[in-house]
Amino acid sequence: MTNKIIYGDALQILSHLADNTVDLVLTDPPYFLDKMDDSWDEKKVSSKKYHHVVKSLPAGMKFDREQGKNFYKWYYKISKEILRVLKPGGFFFSFSSPRLYHRMVCAIDDAGFFIRDSFIWLYTQNQPKAMSLNHFIDRLNENEQTKINLKKQLSGWKTPQIKSCFEPIAMAQKEPEGTFLENFRKYKVGLLNTNVKIGQDMFPANVVSTETINEVVDKCFLISKPDKKEKGDFNIHKTVKPLSLCEHIIRLTTYSNEAVVLDPFCGSGTTLVAAKNLGRKFIGIDINKEYIEIAKLRTEKMNGSAAQYNASRAEKQLQLCEKTAAYKIPRKAKRQALINS
Ligand SMILES: C[S@@+](CC[C@H](N)C(=O)[O-])C[C@H]1O[C@@H](n2cnc3c(N)ncnc32)[C@H](O)[C@@H]1O
Image (cartoon, rainbow, N blue to C red; front, side, top):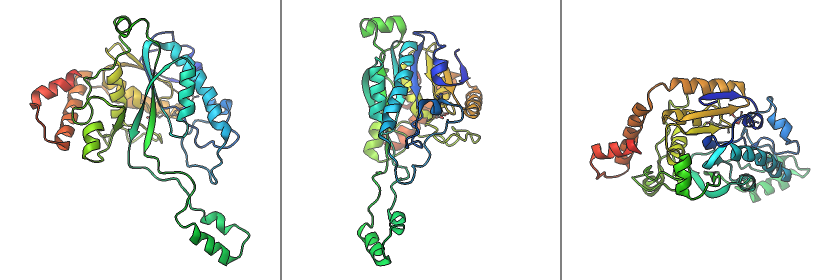
């Protein structure tokens, strides 16, 4: 199934993958934020009709206490399958939302993974979702003066949705066989490649950013910024992840070109493009036919060899380092080090 993008329900397709064959699972599952009412149910969200993600929050914030629990039950089953198909020591990185992270990570933990860490993808650009209450005040059965007073009293006070400026990413690992060294020699997974640097030649951290924020943040956490063209102008997916973020995680965790990277909720295929860019094998799954076509187009467009690609990526990272601070290591040696990593 390698280098294939498969149309269908993740749980069902995963059951066809062989045990212990995947090196890394990197995915951004649907969060179902547009289904915050009582009608969240697994069958419905798994159906081909229901595949949209992260729309606007419903008016009145209908938080359903069952939503997180239902998400847990479903993601527990997904995580069990992921555990089965991963090689011993293989990593599972799963994006989440700050509000549902706890349920997601419990599902992964309970399915049998070791939770090794949580990453934070930090950004500053996001639309706050908090709402003013004026609209509801207008509908109160009160006289005009009371409404005016209430609006004045609540000026600036909004529904409890703070501006969201990070996305948590769970970093889990399937139990290695024997020691880390024994496991690595047998399966070529389970260790982290600390030659992969972030920011200004820094040791990889669990905070990453894909936009320039300020000197300190950029120096410690910046990985390269998204290229305007990387999504493809045909890409209508609403929640496309930055390519550099996926590449960063793949470079950190996979060792050889034989490594297989699986994304069971691949959407427009960012993980798959990243894997292909780096000369890794990939498997993508999505329940939406249109997204499958977009993912295919995006992966097919990437025809350059991995070596060529690595050289151009190294050049970009170098330019980034040079922009953020004075650069001391000789350019040629640095470029080679970046390509090698
Ligand atoms: C958050 S998006 C992934 C976006 C992707 N990372 C990208 O950069 O384009 C989640 C994806 O999961 C898909 N999906 C939802 N339910 C699914 C299911 N049961 N099986 C497989 N895919 C599903 C949706 O169609 C959507 O494209």
